[in-house]
Image 1: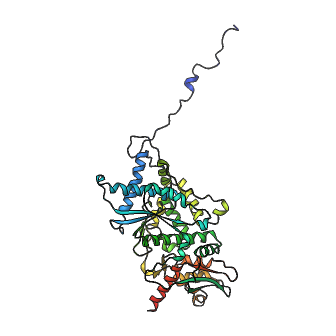
Image 2: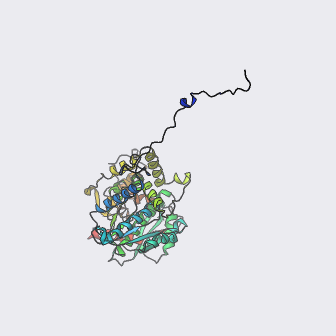
Amino acid sequence: MDSNKKINCRSDSSSEDLPAEKKKKIINCLKCKAKPHNVNIRKNYPLCKECFLSFMQHKFRTNIGQAKKVKKGVNVLIALSGGNCSRALLDIFYKYHKGAENPKSGKIQRFKDIAVAYIDDSIITGESHVQKIKEIVTPYDIPLLIRPIEDIFSISLDDNNDNYKIITVKNKDGKKELEISQNTNIDNKTAMKELYESIPLLADKECLINNIRLVLLNYMAKISKYPVLCLGDSSTKVAIDVISNTCKGRGSSLPEDIASETELLKDVVIIKPGKTLLKEEFIQYNEYFDLDYIPEKQYNSSEIAKSIDLISAGFISDLQENFPSTVTTVVSTANKITVEEENYSSYHCSLCLCPIRKDSEKWLASNSITEVKDRTDYNYDHTEVYKNIPKYYQYLCFNCHILIDSINLQENQTVYLPYYVAEKINKYISASSS
């Protein structure tokens, strides 16, 4: 064989035998059908950037338009936590409002003035975000109202009440006891911190903070003459609340908790215009406009295991990842839950202001029985057990029963509940005795 002859080891047909490189299929926007999609958060609903932003604005405007309790020309207070959802909602609301202010836009101006409310809970978290919130709101040139969370101990929800009393929680003969006493000018910071630290479980701490934060926001809206309070709840948060609130004993108040519009205080309507938008969509909105926000606190596995809210969030997130219609299905199903007025008391919970079932004491008594063989016997005569239920519990919802019961007091320690709780209880006692 000629040594100078080159040997070709590659078959002439090898290039033909190799599989052709598959071209990646370009999926166009489902709405405009002209541009490649950029967003596919809802899996089967790919959108380009322009159509996605239009989709966000359309959902927002639709939800605002469906708010039947909101009158035209009123002021709106936007609750801002600094997280992704409330941050994006602030921007959407502002652009919606400014667009309507322009006579050339042809849009109807639904609201008169808008402002932002922020609750500073640094006394609880140990970290202040006030400066960051100011930096976020300043470019919009709208009023910013800031109140520390401990102010909950100095507010009155009754304009005509000047009888300053307060609820004390103490141990008596090994049992929890609630007493109404004269307000002795307690220090708000100390009272807030001691109440929070007296609750051992993270799940119950979450209940306390969520309840008083919402009450304080409503109070801020009322005294500042903003008849509408706008919350930044996404559909993801609503789905999580359905699970977590049921686990916490707030199942009977779900219609109020997740409603698109509701009232906790007279003359203040709460709206949730982001209720039909996913959390991931708010995050994408912030990325497109490069909006600054306060990152969520990161929790380790042991902390997550102690929190009903975090466990519920993980549960919904895992389901949503594999079944994209999870959040929508949970929210739409929960929206069908209705309240039968005859099953509820004529007054609301003195702590969280949610409706109280007439049989909430009976449920508490059922959970207090240890000597009965069958604790599931709901028709058991609870007369004797009622005697062990702390005074004034009939003016609290079942969830707040659990919350107060969880308070762990040291020897001779006394903690206080916010002033408005005693105010509400006194009002209900007077109404029932007249």
